[in-house]
Length: 74
Image (cartoon, rainbow, N blue to C red; front, top):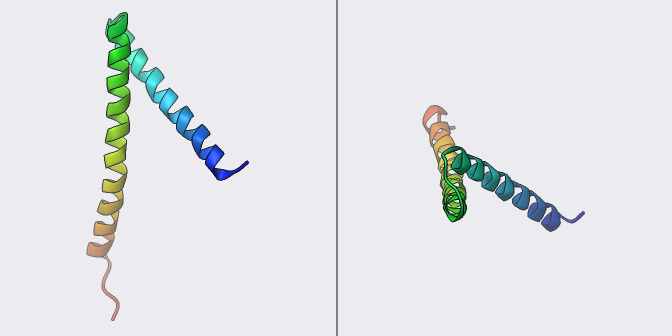
């Protein structure tokens, strides 16, 4: 299987799982009909955007901590 196809499958599964969890949260909150779809879309894109910001921030924070705590080589 080529890497591009694997990436597409993983991306689809990830997005679908976030969407289903968002639907469950909205339904448990008592939202029905079109409102449930709107809440699901908003929560899904909110989670994807938050992860898109969190992953690079974690990388920067870990390299900053590494730079602070490791002694420079002479």
